[in-house]
Structures are given as C-alpha cells and as structure tokens.
Amino acid sequence: MRKNVIAGNWKMNKVAAEAEKFVADTKDKVPSTAKVESVVCAPFLYLQSLVKQSEGTDLKIAAQNMHYEENGAFTGEVSPSMLKDIGVTYVVLGHSERRELFAETDETVNKKAHAAFKHDLTPIVCVGETLEQRESNQTMDVVSEQVKKGLAGLTDNQVKATILAYEPIWAIGTGKTASSEQANEVCTHIRKVVAETFSTDAAEAVRIQYGGSVKPANVDELLAQSDIDGALVGGASLEADSFLQLVEAGAK
Ligand code: 13P
Image 1 (tube, helix red, strand yellow):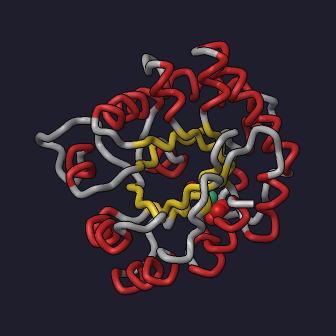
Image 2 (cartoon, helix red, strand yellow):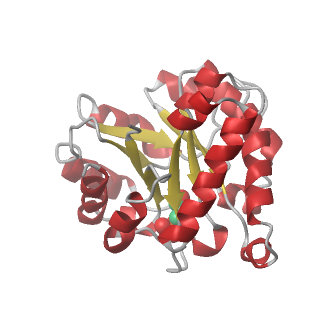
C-alpha cells in the first residue's frame, strides 16, 4: 500500500505574512495518518521560518528547486546542503516551468536527484509532455525518456524513496485536467518504465503524483486510480481551506 503525497506548489506566490498565515491555518489540521503526507513547496525565502513554524506537526516543507553542487560560484543558486541545514525535507526537481523557462534538462535533473539523496532530501521529480507532443502521440516516449534520464544511476532503494510527478504541461494552470483515465494511463506507463529500468519492487514502491489543474472537485476521482498516489497542486493549494480539502481526500 503506497502512501499518498499531496503537495501544494505555491510557485512564485505569497508574501511572508501570507505564507506564515497559511502554515498557521493548516499545520495542526493536516491529517495525522499513515495514508497521506502533506507537503508545501514554498519559495526559498520562507523555507527556514516555515520549517520552524511547522516543527512537530505533519506538515512538511519542500523547496521548489535547488542546484546540484554543494557550494561555489553559482550566483543566485541554493545548494542541497543549505536546504538540509535548515531542515527542509523534500525538493521539487525538473518542474516543467523550470524546464521551459530556466533551461532545466534531464541531465541537470539527474544530477540534482543524486544530490538530493546525498543530503537526505526526498526528490519530487516532475515529468510531462507538451500539448504538441500529446497530439503527435509522443507522450509515452517523452515521459519514458524523462524518467529514465532523470533517475539514471540511482539505486533501487533511492528509486523507491523518490516521488515522481506526472504533470502534462497542457493541463497546468489551464483548468484543463487530464481525465483520470488519461492521467492513470501515463502513470501506469511510468511504473512500467521504472520496473523495466530498475526492478518490480522499485516500481511497486515509487509514488507517482498527478499534477495539472487538480482541485477539491476532481481530486477524489484522480486518487481513485490504480497508479496515482497523490497530487502536485498549484492554484488550488494557495488557499488553506482548499489545501486542507485536498489532503483530506488523500487520507481517505
Ligand atoms: P495547477 O494546479 O495550477 O494547474 O499547477 C500544477 C503544477 O504545476 C503543480 O506543480
């Protein structure tokens, strides 16, 4: 039985007081159960204070990106050791916005995944196709390649601890959700790729989230699918009430 992971990705939203209010409003209300992990992916600036604020609760704090090097001349970057040092436990890697707007590649995602494990951070590795790729029937190939390259060289145990997020780019922020069958079809395929590349044990254990216009109204149907183990949520994770409804759905 895989534990659902509901992660709210705030992206570049909220000022400090709003971030703190959100955590104050949710940290003692997220379900404390073996069925769901509740995660908030916040901008770098707020990570340290949000980690402190949520200490001792079931609300976990994630970074939205990091560099793969420990330190050095990388102006504007944040390293895995810095995240570990302030108590961050998860990190989103290879989000499509980073791939499309900030030149993230499968190779850098892979370096970052290795760096995450070196520092005991759980990576949430994002994959997903563009609308053009979907319409030309390339979805499965694109996603396979992203999974294989992104996870290359990880051990079976590391793969088991990885969270994958399938986020079709055409469904992000568009209000256009993949149907739960469409989403599950790709997640099932991803699990097959993990089985073939690593092992059936790794494929059984790895959690695969769906992301793209997830909201309280459609989350139950998505989570009811055989290969969907949670959600990575943008817009609908910005309000505490909506986030709490999503994590409650994950705990059912
Ligand atoms: P939306 O839920 O706003 O579509 O964003 C999805 C996403 O990109 C989460 O990482």
